[in-house]
Length: 479
Image 1 (spheres, rainbow, N blue to C red):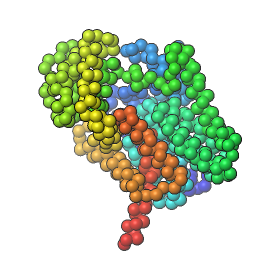
Image 2: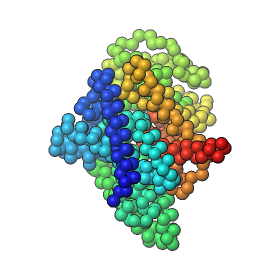
Image 3: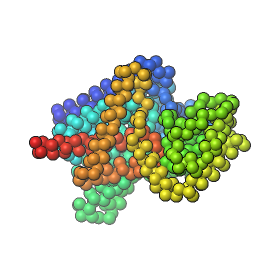
Image 4: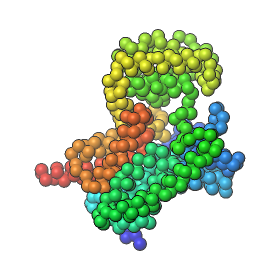
């Protein structure tokens, strides 16, 4: 039975999330956004998450369909348990609306559980209310609630995972441990990088068994309970992929099959020096390569290389960069980029040559400095997301500025806390998870896209609230 205080937390948390959805939705209505379909903002790669479950219902096979044909393992099937039945019983339009409503509800529950987690870790009502408000008004997170992509559900499932992990830590309930593993596995199938949540899970399981007098059999039993959902689901997924594709595919093929070979070669070249590989970010290297409209004939391009570091232009001649760009726009304009052509092969050859050349001439920059540059792009973008208020009017600009300041405020306070504060056992393990996600995306995979931070941002917000509270206490003591 929930106490009155917890009921209050839940109602406020859910209410704020509903208001945030309505606020962002009105932004789409205000600009007559063509991607608005019912309650769903059907933008970018939303189809990769709801298309395959629909294909399974219609054709009996889970696959993504695009210009390359049928892709049977393009994305892991995280949305299938929810969207599959919705599509089967209600059809496409109603199913998308139901999925959005489900996301809002789950995000509200997750926002409430984040307060419960904060209460366990910090035992301070002021922190609880700060978490409720600062997490609640985060458009950086809630922007993905209005879309049927993976961010919203992954974020919610990770918070559910942490909540049940803490319950297990408190009372050693194997039932709670099972649900912890269940939601961890679901988060993995929504966003595979979420498998990193098993790092703190195993550490906490080991610690909890040890606190009760370590017994190897009990430890193995606990590990099996927390991982059974993942093992069964992953085994089924691997078997299904091998049967269909004749190859071992434990996760998905989105990285391998995204874009075209020539586009991937350009991305690889850009990331060799830590450039910005987001084509929609103005003044970035990827935007420079892809910024012109797709035409059948491309004339002389702008000889403007302001986005490239000086040492890159000393290694790769400007004429060669411009040639790669011109050739890509030609074949992309003719829709030939998905097949092997002499021009696409020339692009790939040149990109591979200059990637190897840059690596040999700037070994330290290639292996170290470039990764730090991507880390900076990942954490500190000039724009955090494509907020729904895109218009140039003053009100829209102020709205975008407010949420950008909110993002940076939370992130900088979090960094301050990492440097100066001493976390407890559970907090250390949650911080381990956050940092491992950041490092994997930006340093290891060299991905600069800021949206990959979304799934751990509510947890970052929680720790920022703790830091704010500690700073307020220190200021009060000084006074």
